[in-house]
Length: 123
Image 1: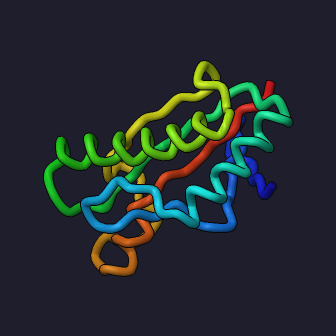
Image 2 (image 1 turned 180 degrees about the horizontal axis):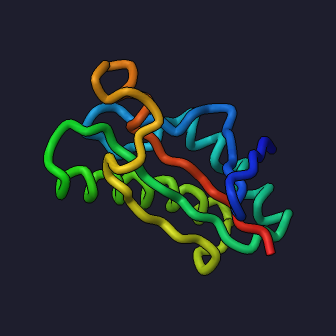
């Protein structure tokens, strides 16, 4: 697994990025398969807590994007729990367009911002 430190947490980089089409909250089949393996590995490692954070681009209202980002995070969280990761150790939240990783002024940048990230907390 590919972890990178970020403050007190560890960000998990996946072989298939968790990117979403505009206005959509459906996890693609390739990402679904990858997440199943991740869930099993995180369970085997006895990871204390997994934070799932959904993001959007900046097209649309703040309220719409908060709801969409939450649905994206929940969709990823559902795949993790369906694959065996304990729901009690999972926290799913949507952050809307508050934390872009790319320029929302371009289609390429907006596409990168429509994502879900997984943050792992280890005790």
